Amino acid sequence: MSDAIHKSEYIKNIFRHIENSMSDDIDTELLSSVGYVSRRKLYYDFYNISGHSVKEYVRKRRLSNALALIKMSDSSFTDIAFQCGYSSYQAFCRVIQQTLNMTMSEYKNSDIYYFFPPFNGEPLQSVIVSSETIPPSTRVFFYHSRLSDIENIAVNKFLEVFPNYDGRIFGRNGKQKGARLCYELILPNTNKSYDILTSHGFEIAENIPCLSATFASSTIPNDKRKINSAWNYLYFEWLQNSMFEYTNEPYYEEYILKNNKPIKLKLYLPIRKRNEETKITLINNPDLCFITAKAKGYNAEEMASRTVIDYFISNYPHIVTTSKEIFLHKEPNICICGIRVNPGFSFVKDENVTIFNTSNNYYLVLESIVMGDYARYANMLFSFAQDNGMYADKRNVFAVYNAGESFQNPKIKMYCPIKICTK
Image (cartoon, rainbow, N blue to C red; front, side, top):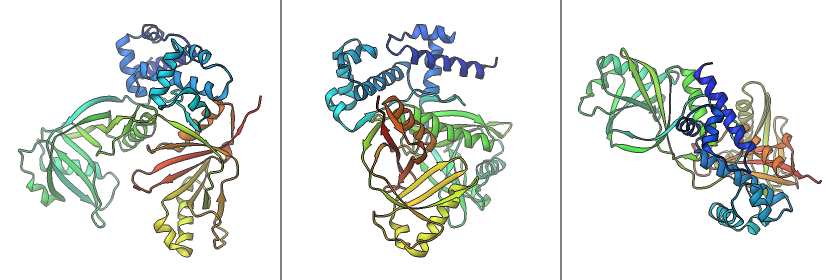
């Protein structure tokens, strides 16, 4: 059995054991024996795969289970405390107060729901969280007419000019300049003169100071598809399940050379510990209205969004420039996109678009400032509804992306119509 398969299997066993032992003391010595690994390796792999320490993960899962019981059961708070593995009622009270800044009674009667789902992601690649330092560097811009493979074109062009370069090379996407696309190289060797690069498609920019920060990093082969998959996994899966959030600071790609060729990349995503836990709210009709378009096929989202934008450009161009809230609903091979309008909006009828209004039902609403995967957030709501005695209307779940502050980092709200299950 390969090391990768062994790691995947033993980590799955660890998470399975934790879920089955939530009401008991969970001993890390026992967990390491479940995985047939040392305690040190358990800590290392668990943290890098899930983004949590064992203690932090167990704490959040235990609290999530306990708070679900507070909402949906008639058991006493004391019974729930002991049932969920807390040493005392007082200890349970302290955890809720520290996490949610409210008492048990206040939480039970509020419209706020705390939920931390069990980790079920596949450890597709190793992720390491550590403090890293990007040294003081010279920043150069490389411009090209196409985006495809611009990173390797820039690095290889640089290595042609400096064939015996023995320093570190970092890179990241830069700002487009007219019709020319940009990739930045960050070069820590500031004692070297890079002026010759200006005759090879580069522009010399300002030096940047030393940067020390916490990064989630992952090393992968220099292959375009693997690089894209690695970034997607790091941001949309690993980060979403971790106790960290993206800081909105620049990311970095470090090129690892062999025989003057970039054979691997080390990805650096700047992160910080989250200030807020995931909260889910139960509300009545959110009173939302959207003009939407529907499309099918592998590029359904692009076609649907293009249709609705063309409609607004033709009929209400001012809405395109002012509206910041985007509707999205996905099904296998189908996508519906829309732009928010005021309820009661009188629109010019068109066979390509329709109007969508929320119904007078209850909705679970998950709000996040972290741009997450649509399917993951939807599944989180479905799982939460099941855990809390609700029926989720999976056919009518939808997301609203709010770019009020920035189109680069829109906030997301996922809405799921629900019915309260009766027993």
